[in-house]
Length: 561
Image 1 (tube, helix red, strand yellow):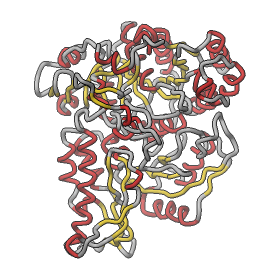
Image 2 (tube, one colour):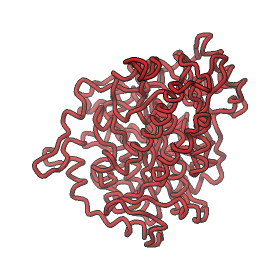
Image 3 (tube, one colour):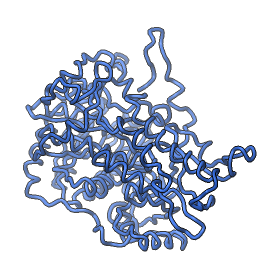
């Protein structure tokens, strides 16, 4: 076991092709009007070139997972492995991923570019500053913050009520000290003191807009529609009232271009946008997905965290906004994680435990049933670990078979695309079958906001009821009166449980979904419903990943996964 290479060691040994050669596989011309290289192995693709591409009847494959545990599930690793597997069996495929945030990179887990022999490269750049997209989003967001306070300082012509400013600042790091702060202190020259706070960049409405925009014009319009504050008589103030949408779009004009990289097997990958699924909608950009659909026959994309969060938001928010639909869904599970759902501690996961595995299976089953509620076919990908036993694998395969679902053992971490050929064939089979199936949303745009929340809580989470105080209910009614009734719902809650209690594993039912607050994202065009104790600015753990990240004597990064 000690001879097993780390993810970063494997990534360093990668024989990367020049990015122009990777793009040549997709028939890109070697033309600066088509793409702009960033170094040797990354490129930004121009929107003008993308717009000239013809639409294709391509297959969209959504990769999601069971409820996450500290044992790991491997959505990104499986997405990369499946893409390589599809190319191995002769299919033209692109993987579309989200950009990693510096928050988790230095916080809970380290990097997020896949693992083992199923990675996107150059791994270090992807996990750190990459092409600077996140910095551009952070700057655009905080420019709006600065313009709000500057407007108030110079006379407040719009009559903004400083008690009713709803636009917070952002930074792409986990920093709990910034959740609630006082600003404009130090006297008259610094402005009018007020309360403020920071969210993490991936929770920014600008990030959501970035990922849900079809082009630059759409981006600018959506930014202009951001609600930043209210007057004393409750009149909304929008970003366009501050003339912020123009300069903010300028800051994002290069970031909005999709980023192309490659897998370890030199297959094309698009990495663009990165909202979290527990506090945002959790999908990469519409532009990236639609670009891939024009360029290939199969597009593999992921949605963050478990299917109750990422997949539901992908289907009810992204698919609705982009007018796209998946051909099938891949549900990633690990035997280790299922045993944790069955009550086993992390340190005991290496031992075979059939009883615990069987106790954890209801979590897998709930996710399968939930996906089928959207009218979609699903295949289970068992992300293999060396400690898994044949008996444990067989238990999952037999259980899935009873549910009418195939389970494929996947060994992409150790074997790359070779280890997902069976999964790739299953996906192709489902895509061919999907043409006869009808995709449907969980709820209609015409139903009330409260009914939409209830549909998600009861149908997806297994909750018995939704509770909220009168203030929250009144806010939802006011949103409907103001013309936002048709907006979809983006629920922010813990990723570790179907409930709002992160310690409630398995497939709990009959619990209550408590709504803490609601936030209108009038630019992104959805309503954020914050539940339980979830924070839109995460904190660092007792021992953050940053503690082990450093440069070695060769100037190489160590400790980043």
